Length: 346
Image (tube, rainbow, N blue to C red):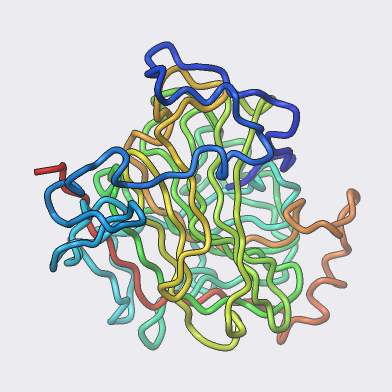
Protein backbone atom coordinates (compact mmCIF):
# COMPACT_ATOMS: atom_id res chain seq x y z
CA UNK A 1 0.00 0.00 0.00
CA UNK A 2 2.98 2.29 0.39
CA UNK A 3 6.60 2.72 -0.66
CA UNK A 4 9.79 1.17 0.65
CA UNK A 5 10.66 4.82 1.30
CA UNK A 6 8.42 7.86 1.19
CA UNK A 7 10.75 10.03 -0.92
CA UNK A 8 8.69 12.65 -2.73
CA UNK A 9 9.41 14.78 -5.81
CA UNK A 10 12.21 16.87 -4.36
CA UNK A 11 14.92 17.57 -6.92
CA UNK A 12 12.94 16.30 -9.94
CA UNK A 13 11.60 18.12 -12.97
CA UNK A 14 8.39 16.99 -14.62
CA UNK A 15 9.19 15.99 -18.20
CA UNK A 16 6.81 16.70 -21.03
CA UNK A 17 4.69 13.78 -22.27
CA UNK A 18 4.90 12.90 -25.93
CA UNK A 19 1.24 13.85 -26.42
CA UNK A 20 1.07 16.70 -23.92
CA UNK A 21 -0.42 19.89 -25.43
CA UNK A 22 1.91 22.87 -25.27
CA UNK A 23 -0.74 24.86 -23.40
CA UNK A 24 -0.58 22.38 -20.53
CA UNK A 25 3.13 21.75 -20.31
CA UNK A 26 4.40 21.66 -16.74
CA UNK A 27 8.16 21.63 -17.34
CA UNK A 28 8.49 25.03 -15.69
CA UNK A 29 6.86 23.98 -12.43
CA UNK A 30 8.77 23.93 -9.19
CA UNK A 31 8.33 20.34 -8.00
CA UNK A 32 7.88 21.49 -4.42
CA UNK A 33 4.90 23.65 -5.39
CA UNK A 34 3.13 21.57 -8.02
CA UNK A 35 -0.35 22.37 -6.76
CA UNK A 36 0.23 26.11 -6.84
CA UNK A 37 1.85 25.90 -10.26
CA UNK A 38 -0.96 23.84 -11.79
CA UNK A 39 -4.01 25.10 -9.93
CA UNK A 40 -7.05 23.50 -11.52
CA UNK A 41 -10.22 25.41 -12.32
CA UNK A 42 -12.86 23.22 -13.87
CA UNK A 43 -14.15 25.99 -16.10
CA UNK A 44 -10.72 26.38 -17.70
CA UNK A 45 -11.26 23.02 -19.35
CA UNK A 46 -15.04 22.51 -19.09
CA UNK A 47 -16.72 25.76 -20.09
CA UNK A 48 -20.15 24.19 -19.67
CA UNK A 49 -19.24 22.06 -16.60
CA UNK A 50 -19.88 18.92 -18.69
CA UNK A 51 -23.36 20.23 -19.45
CA UNK A 52 -24.59 19.62 -15.89
CA UNK A 53 -23.78 22.88 -14.16
CA UNK A 54 -22.71 26.48 -14.59
CA UNK A 55 -19.44 28.32 -14.08
CA UNK A 56 -19.06 30.60 -11.09
CA UNK A 57 -17.13 33.85 -11.15
CA UNK A 58 -14.26 31.99 -9.44
CA UNK A 59 -14.01 29.48 -12.30
CA UNK A 60 -15.54 26.60 -10.39
CA UNK A 61 -18.61 24.58 -11.33
CA UNK A 62 -21.95 24.95 -9.59
CA UNK A 63 -23.62 21.63 -10.29
CA UNK A 64 -27.21 20.98 -11.27
CA UNK A 65 -29.35 18.81 -9.01
CA UNK A 66 -28.33 15.17 -9.25
CA UNK A 67 -24.66 15.89 -10.03
CA UNK A 68 -21.47 16.51 -8.06
CA UNK A 69 -17.71 16.69 -8.47
CA UNK A 70 -15.19 19.22 -9.70
CA UNK A 71 -16.74 19.20 -13.21
CA UNK A 72 -20.29 18.04 -12.32
CA UNK A 73 -19.70 14.67 -14.01
CA UNK A 74 -20.28 12.42 -10.96
CA UNK A 75 -23.79 11.20 -10.19
CA UNK A 76 -25.29 12.09 -6.82
CA UNK A 77 -26.91 8.66 -6.59
CA UNK A 78 -24.57 5.74 -5.82
CA UNK A 79 -24.20 2.77 -8.15
CA UNK A 80 -23.85 0.55 -5.09
CA UNK A 81 -23.70 0.83 -1.31
CA UNK A 82 -22.27 -1.67 1.18
CA UNK A 83 -23.53 -1.15 4.72
CA UNK A 84 -22.38 -4.50 6.16
CA UNK A 85 -25.80 -5.49 7.43
CA UNK A 86 -25.98 -9.15 8.29
CA UNK A 87 -23.34 -11.34 9.88
CA UNK A 88 -21.18 -12.42 6.92
CA UNK A 89 -18.99 -10.68 4.38
CA UNK A 90 -20.61 -10.06 1.00
CA UNK A 91 -18.44 -12.23 -1.26
CA UNK A 92 -19.67 -10.48 -4.41
CA UNK A 93 -18.08 -7.22 -3.20
CA UNK A 94 -15.12 -8.37 -1.07
CA UNK A 95 -12.43 -11.03 -1.12
CA UNK A 96 -10.32 -11.73 1.96
CA UNK A 97 -6.64 -11.24 1.24
CA UNK A 98 -4.05 -13.71 2.57
CA UNK A 99 -0.37 -12.80 2.60
CA UNK A 100 2.76 -11.85 4.57
CA UNK A 101 4.62 -9.56 2.19
CA UNK A 102 4.48 -6.56 4.54
CA UNK A 103 3.77 -4.04 1.79
CA UNK A 104 7.48 -3.32 1.30
CA UNK A 105 7.29 -1.08 4.36
CA UNK A 106 8.75 -3.18 7.15
CA UNK A 107 5.29 -3.95 8.54
CA UNK A 108 4.90 -6.58 11.24
CA UNK A 109 1.64 -8.31 10.23
CA UNK A 110 0.43 -11.22 8.12
CA UNK A 111 -3.04 -10.96 6.63
CA UNK A 112 -5.13 -14.07 7.19
CA UNK A 113 -8.61 -15.42 6.55
CA UNK A 114 -9.05 -16.39 10.19
CA UNK A 115 -12.40 -15.46 11.69
CA UNK A 116 -10.98 -13.15 14.33
CA UNK A 117 -9.10 -11.08 11.72
CA UNK A 118 -11.94 -10.37 9.28
CA UNK A 119 -15.58 -10.44 10.35
CA UNK A 120 -18.88 -8.54 10.26
CA UNK A 121 -20.44 -7.49 13.55
CA UNK A 122 -23.24 -5.08 14.49
CA UNK A 123 -23.37 -3.42 11.08
CA UNK A 124 -19.62 -2.99 10.61
CA UNK A 125 -16.79 -4.74 8.87
CA UNK A 126 -14.16 -5.44 11.52
CA UNK A 127 -10.50 -5.78 10.55
CA UNK A 128 -8.67 -6.87 13.67
CA UNK A 129 -4.95 -7.11 14.36
CA UNK A 130 -4.01 -9.74 16.95
CA UNK A 131 -0.65 -10.17 18.68
CA UNK A 132 0.57 -13.65 17.73
CA UNK A 133 3.76 -15.02 16.22
CA UNK A 134 2.34 -16.36 12.98
CA UNK A 135 4.35 -18.50 10.51
CA UNK A 136 2.06 -17.82 7.53
CA UNK A 137 0.39 -20.31 5.21
CA UNK A 138 0.25 -21.09 1.51
CA UNK A 139 -3.39 -22.10 1.84
CA UNK A 140 -5.51 -19.46 0.13
CA UNK A 141 -2.41 -17.31 -0.52
CA UNK A 142 -3.38 -14.17 -2.48
CA UNK A 143 0.16 -13.21 -3.47
CA UNK A 144 1.47 -14.18 -6.94
CA UNK A 145 4.51 -15.57 -5.11
CA UNK A 146 3.15 -18.24 -2.72
CA UNK A 147 6.49 -18.43 -0.90
CA UNK A 148 5.96 -14.88 0.39
CA UNK A 149 2.95 -16.12 2.35
CA UNK A 150 5.40 -18.05 4.54
CA UNK A 151 7.37 -14.94 5.53
CA UNK A 152 5.56 -14.91 8.85
CA UNK A 153 4.78 -12.00 11.12
CA UNK A 154 4.47 -10.94 14.75
CA UNK A 155 0.78 -10.09 14.27
CA UNK A 156 -2.19 -11.53 12.41
CA UNK A 157 -4.48 -8.94 10.81
CA UNK A 158 -7.23 -8.39 8.24
CA UNK A 159 -7.49 -7.06 4.69
CA UNK A 160 -10.25 -7.23 2.09
CA UNK A 161 -10.07 -6.36 -1.63
CA UNK A 162 -12.87 -5.75 -4.09
CA UNK A 163 -12.89 -8.32 -6.94
CA UNK A 164 -11.64 -7.31 -10.40
CA UNK A 165 -15.16 -7.07 -11.87
CA UNK A 166 -15.94 -4.28 -9.37
CA UNK A 167 -13.07 -2.13 -10.58
CA UNK A 168 -13.83 1.33 -11.99
CA UNK A 169 -12.14 4.37 -13.50
CA UNK A 170 -13.38 7.70 -12.12
CA UNK A 171 -16.22 8.59 -9.77
CA UNK A 172 -16.60 9.17 -6.05
CA UNK A 173 -15.88 6.70 -3.26
CA UNK A 174 -17.11 7.25 0.30
CA UNK A 175 -16.15 5.18 3.32
CA UNK A 176 -17.30 5.62 6.91
CA UNK A 177 -14.74 4.29 9.35
CA UNK A 178 -13.77 4.38 13.00
CA UNK A 179 -10.00 4.30 13.31
CA UNK A 180 -8.08 2.27 15.91
CA UNK A 181 -6.54 4.07 18.88
CA UNK A 182 -3.63 1.70 19.53
CA UNK A 183 -0.13 3.01 18.82
CA UNK A 184 1.57 1.58 15.71
CA UNK A 185 -1.73 0.48 14.15
CA UNK A 186 -1.89 1.63 10.50
CA UNK A 187 -5.41 1.63 9.00
CA UNK A 188 -5.61 2.23 5.26
CA UNK A 189 -8.50 2.75 2.81
CA UNK A 190 -7.03 2.78 -0.69
CA UNK A 191 -7.25 1.88 -4.37
CA UNK A 192 -4.95 -0.23 -6.56
CA UNK A 193 -5.12 -1.07 -10.28
CA UNK A 194 -7.24 -4.03 -11.31
CA UNK A 195 -4.58 -4.92 -13.90
CA UNK A 196 -0.97 -3.81 -14.09
CA UNK A 197 -1.50 -1.96 -17.37
CA UNK A 198 1.66 0.15 -17.12
CA UNK A 199 3.75 -2.33 -15.14
CA UNK A 200 4.14 -3.42 -11.54
CA UNK A 201 3.93 -1.05 -8.56
CA UNK A 202 4.09 1.87 -8.69
CA UNK A 203 4.01 2.12 -12.51
CA UNK A 204 0.25 1.47 -12.66
CA UNK A 205 -0.51 3.89 -9.84
CA UNK A 206 -2.15 3.87 -6.43
CA UNK A 207 -4.68 6.21 -4.80
CA UNK A 208 -4.76 6.31 -0.99
CA UNK A 209 -8.12 7.59 0.24
CA UNK A 210 -7.15 7.66 3.91
CA UNK A 211 -4.22 6.51 6.00
CA UNK A 212 -3.89 7.25 9.70
CA UNK A 213 -1.02 6.90 12.15
CA UNK A 214 -3.21 5.49 14.86
CA UNK A 215 -2.87 6.30 18.51
CA UNK A 216 -4.92 7.86 21.30
CA UNK A 217 -6.90 10.84 19.96
CA UNK A 218 -5.46 10.49 16.43
CA UNK A 219 -6.78 13.32 14.26
CA UNK A 220 -4.62 13.45 11.12
CA UNK A 221 -5.48 11.63 7.90
CA UNK A 222 -3.39 11.44 4.72
CA UNK A 223 -4.47 11.30 1.06
CA UNK A 224 -1.83 10.26 -1.49
CA UNK A 225 -1.13 9.23 -5.07
CA UNK A 226 1.83 6.98 -5.98
CA UNK A 227 3.53 6.63 -9.37
CA UNK A 228 6.89 6.01 -11.05
CA UNK A 229 8.53 3.70 -13.59
CA UNK A 230 9.41 1.09 -10.93
CA UNK A 231 9.86 0.80 -7.18
CA UNK A 232 13.37 2.28 -7.36
CA UNK A 233 12.02 5.49 -8.90
CA UNK A 234 8.84 5.59 -6.82
CA UNK A 235 7.38 9.07 -6.24
CA UNK A 236 4.31 10.28 -4.39
CA UNK A 237 2.26 13.41 -3.79
CA UNK A 238 0.27 13.68 -0.58
CA UNK A 239 -1.81 16.00 1.54
CA UNK A 240 -3.12 15.73 5.07
CA UNK A 241 -5.54 17.37 7.44
CA UNK A 242 -6.42 17.24 11.11
CA UNK A 243 -10.10 16.51 11.51
CA UNK A 244 -12.29 18.46 13.90
CA UNK A 245 -12.86 15.38 16.04
CA UNK A 246 -10.97 12.35 17.31
CA UNK A 247 -10.83 9.84 14.44
CA UNK A 248 -10.70 6.97 16.94
CA UNK A 249 -13.74 8.03 19.02
CA UNK A 250 -16.44 7.98 16.32
CA UNK A 251 -17.12 7.15 12.68
CA UNK A 252 -15.97 9.70 10.09
CA UNK A 253 -16.53 9.80 6.34
CA UNK A 254 -13.48 9.64 4.05
CA UNK A 255 -13.96 10.24 0.33
CA UNK A 256 -12.23 10.88 -3.00
CA UNK A 257 -13.64 12.34 -6.19
CA UNK A 258 -11.69 11.16 -9.23
CA UNK A 259 -12.08 12.60 -12.74
CA UNK A 260 -9.73 12.49 -15.77
CA UNK A 261 -8.34 15.89 -14.78
CA UNK A 262 -8.11 15.83 -10.99
CA UNK A 263 -8.49 13.91 -7.73
CA UNK A 264 -9.83 15.55 -4.57
CA UNK A 265 -9.90 14.23 -1.00
CA UNK A 266 -12.53 14.90 1.70
CA UNK A 267 -13.13 14.20 5.39
CA UNK A 268 -16.70 14.61 6.65
CA UNK A 269 -17.53 16.54 3.48
CA UNK A 270 -14.66 19.03 3.80
CA UNK A 271 -12.10 19.03 0.99
CA UNK A 272 -8.51 18.93 2.25
CA UNK A 273 -6.38 17.93 -0.73
CA UNK A 274 -6.32 18.32 -4.52
CA UNK A 275 -4.10 16.87 -7.25
CA UNK A 276 -4.29 17.54 -10.95
CA UNK A 277 -3.95 14.42 -13.08
CA UNK A 278 -4.19 16.07 -16.52
CA UNK A 279 -0.42 16.05 -16.79
CA UNK A 280 2.53 13.78 -17.32
CA UNK A 281 3.86 12.07 -14.21
CA UNK A 282 7.57 11.15 -13.95
CA UNK A 283 8.19 7.65 -15.24
CA UNK A 284 4.88 7.45 -17.12
CA UNK A 285 4.42 7.52 -20.89
CA UNK A 286 1.47 9.78 -21.62
CA UNK A 287 -0.95 12.33 -20.23
CA UNK A 288 -2.97 11.19 -17.18
CA UNK A 289 -1.19 7.84 -16.87
CA UNK A 290 -1.33 5.96 -14.59
CA UNK A 291 -4.51 7.53 -13.16
CA UNK A 292 -6.63 6.66 -16.19
CA UNK A 293 -7.21 2.93 -15.64
CA UNK A 294 -9.72 0.94 -13.54
CA UNK A 295 -8.88 0.48 -9.89
CA UNK A 296 -10.31 -1.63 -7.09
CA UNK A 297 -10.84 -0.91 -3.40
CA UNK A 298 -8.70 -2.24 -0.54
CA UNK A 299 -9.31 -1.96 3.22
CA UNK A 300 -6.64 -3.15 5.63
CA UNK A 301 -5.13 -2.76 9.08
CA UNK A 302 -1.33 -2.95 9.09
CA UNK A 303 0.96 -2.86 12.13
CA UNK A 304 4.12 -0.78 12.28
CA UNK A 305 6.41 0.05 9.38
CA UNK A 306 8.10 3.10 7.93
CA UNK A 307 4.89 5.11 7.67
CA UNK A 308 5.70 5.96 11.29
CA UNK A 309 8.60 8.46 11.55
CA UNK A 310 9.66 6.99 14.90
CA UNK A 311 9.52 3.35 13.78
CA UNK A 312 13.01 1.96 14.51
CA UNK A 313 14.88 0.33 11.64
CA UNK A 314 15.29 -2.80 13.69
CA UNK A 315 11.62 -2.82 14.60
CA UNK A 316 9.85 -2.65 17.92
CA UNK A 317 9.54 -5.77 20.07
CA UNK A 318 6.05 -7.13 19.34
CA UNK A 319 5.18 -7.53 23.00
CA UNK A 320 6.10 -3.88 23.60
CA UNK A 321 3.66 -2.88 20.85
CA UNK A 322 0.85 -5.05 22.13
CA UNK A 323 1.36 -4.11 25.77
CA UNK A 324 -0.68 -0.95 25.26
CA UNK A 325 -3.40 -2.71 23.27
CA UNK A 326 -6.54 -3.89 25.10
CA UNK A 327 -6.34 -7.68 25.12
CA UNK A 328 -3.51 -7.51 22.56
CA UNK A 329 -5.90 -6.49 19.78
CA UNK A 330 -6.62 -3.46 17.60
CA UNK A 331 -9.63 -2.86 15.35
CA UNK A 332 -10.53 -0.85 12.26
CA UNK A 333 -14.32 -0.59 11.85
CA UNK A 334 -15.99 0.28 8.51
CA UNK A 335 -19.79 0.61 8.42
CA UNK A 336 -20.38 2.02 4.93
CA UNK A 337 -18.75 2.03 1.50
CA UNK A 338 -20.45 3.68 -1.49
CA UNK A 339 -19.45 4.22 -5.12
CA UNK A 340 -20.87 7.03 -7.26
CA UNK A 341 -20.11 6.60 -11.00
CA UNK A 342 -18.81 9.25 -13.37
CA UNK A 343 -20.65 9.87 -16.62
CA UNK A 344 -18.95 11.39 -19.70
CA UNK A 345 -19.78 15.01 -20.57
CA UNK A 346 -23.10 15.55 -22.32
